[in-house]
Length: 186
Picture 1 (cartoon, rainbow, N blue to C red):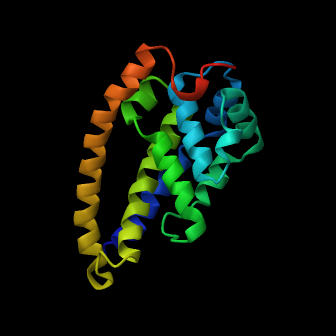
Picture 2 (picture 1 turned 90 degrees about the horizontal axis):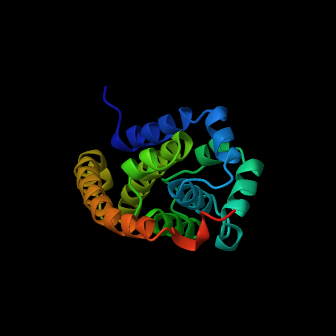
């Protein structure tokens, strides 16, 4: 029997984290001046974990946070299906921070660890958006699997279009030599 879509989404989300090795995380901690994509992805991930923006203003702060965090364990504890008032700001801040990034930028201009975390976040963002629609009653619970499959396809297509459009913004930032909030500074 086929798994319902919510379970499939959660499985896809957790599979990405399984690829995040300790050596990949060690690479993140070793950067003095990381590629811009690394800093942006890590800032977004920590915002999703509920860390304060003021604690993530530069790479030095992010690097210290990375050293204090079991990323795989903490990210695995994030549940996109939880619709609690206290989690809404986390999702919003993380999405806003990740805006303008895309999977190609994360892989080519980042590191393996940041690219895997980025891909994990994208799956988690889509799952969270679907669960939010289900929670708000925009999708009928009785037919959630079929409706969520259709909605998932639409969200993925919209996300791809947004990534393509946002890539221009990232390229402009990168061309000016300054990713947001001075991440290239130690």
